[in-house]
Image (cartoon, rainbow, N blue to C red):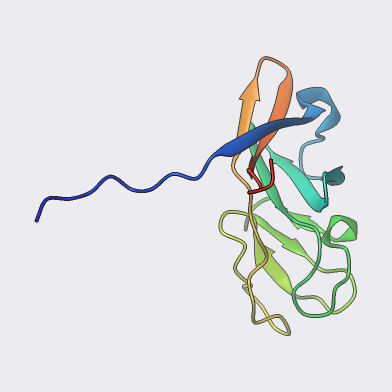
Length: 119
C-alpha cells in the first residue's frame, strides 16, 4: 500500500484588502460572497477567521485582539479564539470558528475560499 496524494479541493482566490488597510493589532471585517470574515494583522502575519462567535453568534470583528497571545476575544461574553487555528481558548465558547488560508501578493491580501460545487 503506497501513500496516496492528499485530495485537494479547488479554491477560489479573492482579494479582500490591501496591506495598508490591515492595521497592525486590529480586527477588520470583510464580506466575501456569503461569508463574514475577520482579517487581523499582527506584525507581518495576516490571519483570517470567521466573524461569528461559536458561543452566541456575536461579531468577533468588534472584539479585542491580543497580539501576544494571537487571539481575538468576543466582546459580548469574553470567549477567546486562536487566530492560528480557530479553536476556543477560553469559555464560554467550546466550538471552533472557521479559519481561512491567506496569501499576500504585493500590497494585496487574498483569502482562499473553497470552490462551491455549483461553480
